[in-house]
Image (cartoon, rainbow, N blue to C red; front, side, top):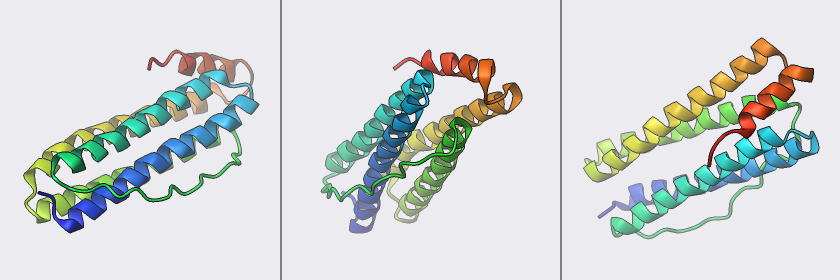
Length: 163
């Protein structure tokens, strides 16, 4: 059984994961308007992943006898400066999510809730991958350039991401 404090924290994380999906959906709107369909495809896969993360937590709370309390999801920004700015903003967002996951893990450790610790290991590993991938995209954009043929090449590469 989950403690009330841990249940509340997991509910907050569900909301944060759903906000992540909203953020990526908003980024898609900008990217489509910029005719960067590969970037948009990459973000759509990312948005679906974030919904999946929220559902993973949702199911876990129920499996542990807790109660999920859904809260309103904050609206994301709708204006972005550039494709590189979008990716940088996504990385910063993922870093914030990583901090949230670490705090959740610390809470689970302090409460000696071993099943939650085990489940959160998956999220910790996932966040390492999320940040690394975005850092690689930023590195490629900075190396190749963010205009003309280089941007088209990166757009094509991102469009190849599988579901």
